[in-house]
Amino acid sequence: MSNVFEEIAGLDKLIHEPARLAIMTILSTVESADFLALQRLTGLTSGNLSVHLSKLVEGKLISYDKKIVGKKTKTQVKITAKGQQALEKHWLQLETFRANIQKSKPE
Image (cartoon, rainbow, N blue to C red):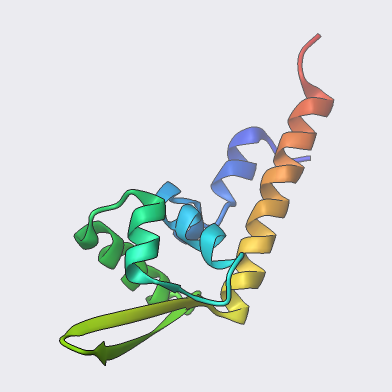
């Protein structure tokens, strides 16, 4: 068994950042979500949300589609297959980490 630091250091930093973990978790439960819904659910400012979405797009974990609806731009965001797999792996690593701590906790 590796030590606690090695297990934590082995987590995917792109996903593990709290705002991105929230975004990915939300997107894993729906077919897609629009930008405003993600902003409302995460509590992020539009600028912060845009930065986090850009990083997830760069990592190919999400994709988005922008459309003009009337006079406004509507952005629909969805998790990719790679993103879904990465998120599932991340949650499994966290659960394994928690289980290992439970097994080895001091008496």
